[in-house]
Length: 201
Image (cartoon, rainbow, N blue to C red):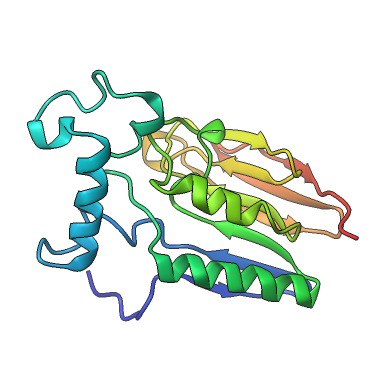
């Protein structure tokens, strides 16, 4: 659906020293694009090359190794231009001395979700963000049970539970401080989760 935006990825700075970066995790997708589009054909190529069960109409995950189970129609990926844009955003944030929170529908690591619900090209995107100390949190959804991991660089990967599967709802707000981020939840999201931030020199 046309929502009036040229691109569905962007960044904003709600307060000084903080940058929120929203990435479009379905830029490459077979479910979002017309079948005659370049994005659709690239997405279909990725699925066909990594998970032949889809085209054969078989059980999507039968005999497919875990490292390829993410290549299914309900997932997607970032295109090359968006990855370049993300790299530039993180470089700029580093120069400006900003902390960065990345928002993505799909998780960027299976450790905070499952191997079946992560971004198709998460290894490339994860490798990119791990180069930048400015990235302190990644917030995602998609994996309805929710999940969490703190990576080797101290970045918090938070996958929130899905509001559509929680009768009590699932939503919250973030409060950011120099040394921590506080997620104040409602419904299935914990009332208060504190994520301490590493010191950036």
